[in-house]
Image (cartoon, rainbow, N blue to C red):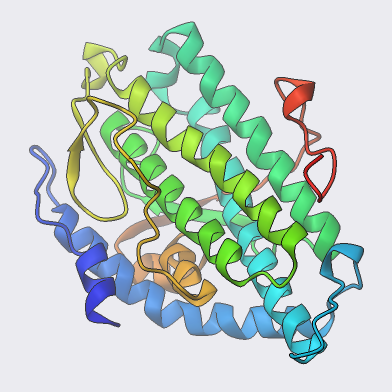
Amino acid sequence: MSTQQEKILVPTDREPGKGTSRRAFLCRASIAGAVGAAGLGSLLSLASASAKGSSALDHHDEDEDRDDLKKRDHDILIAAEIAEALAVTTYTNIIDVAPFFTRLASDDQGYLRAARQEEMSHYLLEKSVTGEPSPFKSFFYPKGMFQDAQTTLNILVTLEDAFIAAYLVGVRHFSTPDLRVTAARIMGIESDHRTLARVLASGVAAQDGGPIEKLTGVQGVAESIDPPNNNGYERTLCWTRIEQAVAALTPFADFNAAKAAGFDVSRSFGFDPFTPKLPNALGDFISFKGC
């Protein structure tokens, strides 16, 4: 693991009332992710060997081997599918399982419901390009997820941080302008989700531990929710390769990595695909050209 990765994944705060520090949790998660990512990397390579030909994966760059370009694009898309399946599963269970959800204001509930629809739309778009589903159909979470509002929102922001950085890897490395623009369009929605997750923290009811004043994302630093839009620029996390995103998400997808990270492995949460209905037709996909 690089020094830069250690800086990102090792926080400096300890949340009051929690038996396990964020420092210990994220150190375990990063180590487990680095170990488990090797298996995921092999899976991505195997998937690339059987990649379906899609117009979105067609290349016209004569300076690089087209098969290598297609493999790289395909690997990024498969990693994105895993992330979107995880996102759908997370939002679904916040809505269906988390006690604090029912006590949120109706507009905050509406945000979470809309985010679930948007993440499902992203997943189906990526699946339409690769012709393959996510290789993972169930996911693990840290202890207290969906029961403790602070844990739930910390993990939600952590995931959105990771999704933003992962799509920026796509912006950096996709080999066609259409794919790069599409990655940027999806990344913008993930940024919306991060900000809105921070907005609703103050609306958590007292009986659920609210109002929550600080949330801790992937960088491991407790940040005030005031203002919720606290980024002047999106955070890349210094990720330049999709394998770094895969490593960060591996504890959520792989049993052994989840166990090593101290996640609750007594149960997993299944990804249940559905047909999404986006909140506004003007915000629908339309085309890979973005028009």
